[in-house]
Image (cartoon, rainbow, N blue to C red; front, side, top):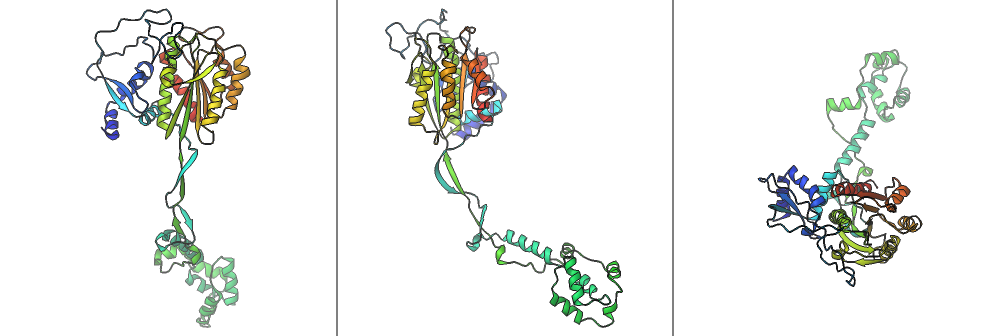
Length: 437
């Protein structure tokens, strides 16, 4: 089925679909979707009692390792945070899936959240001809802008044209002649030539040359038509065109810029980042990845995991890794800076740096290291997402410190996700900050 048919089908779902979109971001199975194809579950229309299973089932590749297990190879287990796992159900819920591409997802999210993010292209990859909006003084006859030339000629006619009957009456004022009439015409901004006045005066009889005793008497008894009124009454017999009025249309040269984006996703994988926190990170980061994939021509993603140290990982491992180490967030930003400088120069790439964790960090690392590095790494947007589903720890201050330092900056967004219901608001906070910048 083509995109047009898909979109038509999708629109037919109506407002129920929009509710499902938001609910899917909060509770849906994100693993059903591929990078270039998003599967949004839609409730069956004739089953109004259907409800999503909102049990805490974890994200992609989650679990806790035993001692000796390789990092990034999580093992399955009954539950996390001391909770028992639920028995698998015998019957699955009846639902359908609507498949959309990331571009369509981005359009829907823009509409749903009222966003207005227009990505800027960086590297020029093509120059092509656009609309015929530019002008030149030379060119082939087929591109001559006759409408413009006519308007210029018409403006000249309106400026130069005069009422000959009215001017001829001035020659009939007693004591006047071509010289005095010519001076009067210039004072009145009437563009009449001296030669024309001489010809008209020579055609008058001696009696006609004394018709009016004064200028005031002539003006009081002689109606004067403006050039526009004269044209309306008599039409246009002649429009004076000149060579300098000629303009030839040619197409403007439009630079097509490839809209490249790299998204650096940073996640705390230290021992305090238990399953619920990891899932909230996934629920926030995954729609952001989809959204930016739909907005840009070419999107690449870098995934960095960190405890006290940082390392680059594949996406499949990113949301499931858990370490027993401490936390030093600056290690991730050091690695991110190195990767961006080496692979994604700021002059050619739009750059987003999204980090998430429970805000726990080593002493003074945020103020002394992380914040300065956020200021030094050029990016369209830096964002930090704090996940604290079970209450905030006393030493979880990273998000607050970043928020306090950057305030209302349009280059940094901080959001707080304590439950799936907060995910949509967090996404809006991050993307609306970028739209404003």
